[in-house]
Length: 78
Image (cartoon, rainbow, N blue to C red; front, side, top):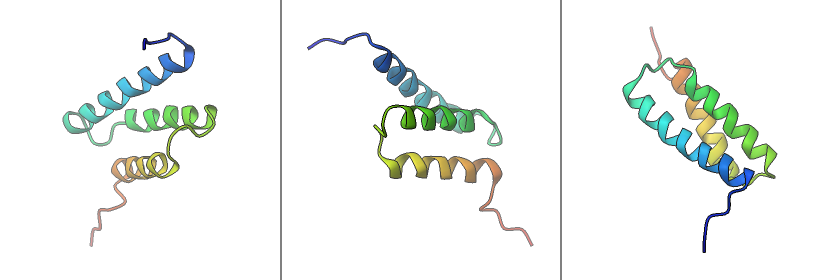
């Protein structure tokens, strides 16, 4: 078994690397950064473009968590 170099495989490897980068930047960078939202936009484009290859619940829950972290909807101030 060997790795075939196709556009699908290259884009998948790019998204896997982007996932690791976003995870590292989430803990070491600013919370209000827009890069995770850009990543989720790319992930949604990949998900839609490749006939829903990823699980719907994981993709949409990741997008929801990214939006909640970015815009701080969970913080209640009185």
